[in-house]
Length: 473
Image (cartoon, rainbow, N blue to C red):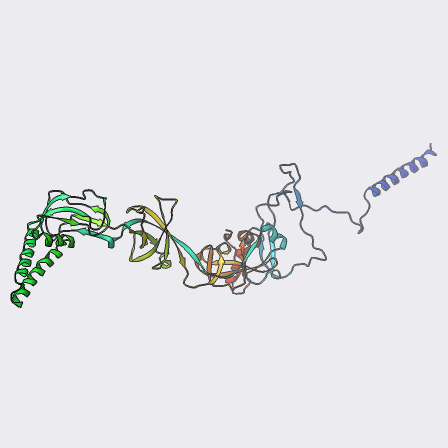
């Protein structure tokens, strides 16, 4: 029994040695002699969409595992950040900062921004890869002739200068109406109505008597002949004043006897707008019988808003669109700009003169005008409106300084026309400004913090932004 104890001890020692060697073969020592420690992921992101993240391992809709994102470890190639901490920024790049350490909605720590990292006031640094992903586009600031289209609504009206009222200068009765309908077209010299007037008959008789006396005194004294001639001329002139046509006077002279009724003729070619005259009625001197308008030229009275009235000039060519003729376009010129403004609508009336040779433009039709308003200066610096980030209190553009380098530049802008702002201050010809992805750069680089630097007078104080700016168009 005693001789088996050493053999048992040798067997136990051999088994222990084999187990120890197997353990060390499965887990060989590291080069530095320490076991590899597992790193804990910060979060997990969608394999196809980096914007979608998760705090726990999960799979996407196609069954692919989310990718683990680890914290970057400092290496010999990565310089250690040092200096005073200015503020803390959101770890995911959102436009949010904090003066004290804090965590985001996913439990991740805000990242410190050191004094050594801070660029010049207003400077923004984004990696070229991010610039490509954001789809950043730029445009060059240059001089342009700015024009913008002014649009206004109005209606067709009668040209007031082409309206004539037919009113007799003597009393009488209407024997017959030749034009007996409103809207009827008449021509110059066309008979409108036939009238009887005792005053007119008396005037004809006076003229004929004076003319006969002139003929009888042909061999008389010079003074008597001159008197008879003056009487005849005065009687004839009286008939002229009463708008008796020359052809009717010639007929009177040829017949040498008064005519009981005479016709009143149309003084112009046009359309009858009003016809108070009735057959058989008695009229008095100055009473309106017809109102006739020449519609060969009409007006478009349009209401132009006060902010656009500075771009309207006399003689400007205007394109007019009439609702009744959607497939046609009419052209006219600005004839008058009214001197008063309607306080109820904040508009100024503009009168456009339109030729109407075809008679299509009827008074009362609605339409609109379009004209190109020229800037006072022939050319000025201009920037695309999509490049402007308007915070409500100031206007800013992102100026490209280099590859991935941008500067937030406050600007003073003027006229907006054809998608461009006139630049009054802040930019020079040849500058490159960001026109696309402004908002994405804003969110990626904390543009609000960069803009706040303009107000800190060079100090290290950083104000926590209350809300991100919005400028992507």
